[in-house]
Image (cartoon, rainbow, N blue to C red):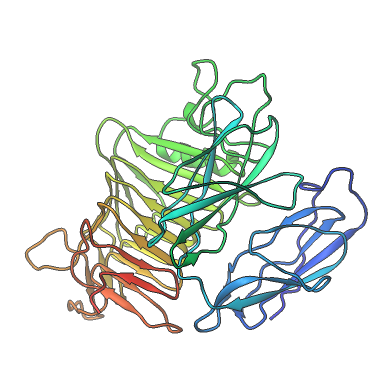
Length: 439
């Protein structure tokens, strides 16, 4: 299938000194199905980042392995940076999936001194170490930065006022994963202060404040959760990492976390002082996490659902850390239609999936990983923390994943009806299952 819609061109990301007539970049799904990535129209010398699988559907038992160029026949990796000097077609290549999933949720932050960058990411089930690579703005090749057993990784000795792109691979004795999607960061000028959690792009985001001065700026100068979310809608920048501090229990509407023309945005919700409950009164998801956005639920945050699912992931990423809770959803706690969910801590409890599967978590053909101290409750008639699945008559039904259901029509499915507590790891990358499933 070929999508023939064209998007507008821009001048960003060009190699130094390049100009000229625009060229078209078109993507084809090959053996895959679904909608391939949108074509692009860019000026000569513009460096594009090749996409991942996005809205394409993989052939049974296969995964996206690269993009074959119509110009030179070379198969380039997903997320490779490619300079465009002519019209080019890229056809998706599908192969045996690696046994390890590619890391997700890669984020970057400039440290003090300003020549250092911290890189972090979601851990991958089964990985024993990670290779970190970087690529300077004007380069089309990756440089190996180092290997580490677990995140974060610190890269030192970088040039000031330079944009860098970071990629991570998971490894174990059986092999390695594909590259992660990139995360970009721009180092400041050598005469400016470091610190803060601003993470990349030509207009880095203003997250928790660093540098000099004591007057709050950016999102820190805004009070109230609804106002902070509105600020993000208008002021979030590509590559920005934003900490949203919640100082009281609040009630909000439904929010779609999607920022037109921007990507690689990380939003962290964190309760201050004590546990803070966020409630809502909508019939849809409290948060709908779209492409290019990572939502992190950090310590002292409880999302209390209403008559919808608490979080829907539509191409973005969700991370749950210790001290966070998702409860009260009447269409399940977390619904993953695309993207990824990494749960290394926290609790999912007291959710109901009416007329559907996955009381705590439903995962279609996307990535889900549960590790560490996290807990997803199953069903017990004596436990008020239970997640539960029900049929159309309201009858409680087993085998549909009171705690978790994962799978879709093109693959086998797994469920977890019993509680998955600390030490019970679960994972599904769209093809492979690992961990303590019930079936």
